[in-house]
Length: 191
Image (cartoon, rainbow, N blue to C red; front, side, top):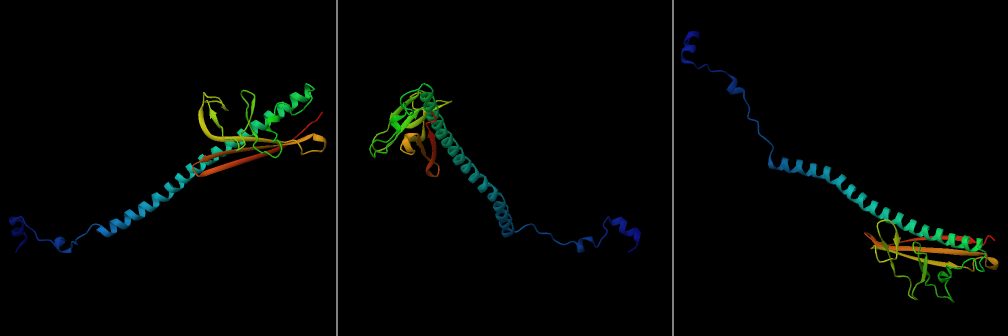
């Protein structure tokens, strides 16, 4: 055939169709492997972020417990200083309910907002602090928290009764079980 004849028929055989290879897509197994790798890449950071959220909640509770204990230490120091400056007969007057009597170590609980000191039962302090949006206290207006604060004062720590050991225990049950923060401070009759 001549060149002109090819154009008449409108069909020119070309070697393009003969060279073309078939291209197949992903197989099902390759797709499953890719999805598994992608899932592992996403799951790792997600697990870490979930654990970090839990740890942050525990850290927040520990911080609150520490400040609840520190609040009582400051309250006891204030009572001591007020008694000494007013020349009261006893420098621990006002917190004597926190001094264990004759081996009974129940302690007391102190409501710093109302300035009340109440003895615990023989089995120990079980009153949970309440949070009213601003302060932790024992009144009935707040939402009950998990925190139980116990105060014990040992006034036999120093010679002549001029030193007392203040022990505060704040315990709570949180996401990972029961936790306890213990604080201790020695106060002195500086008169």
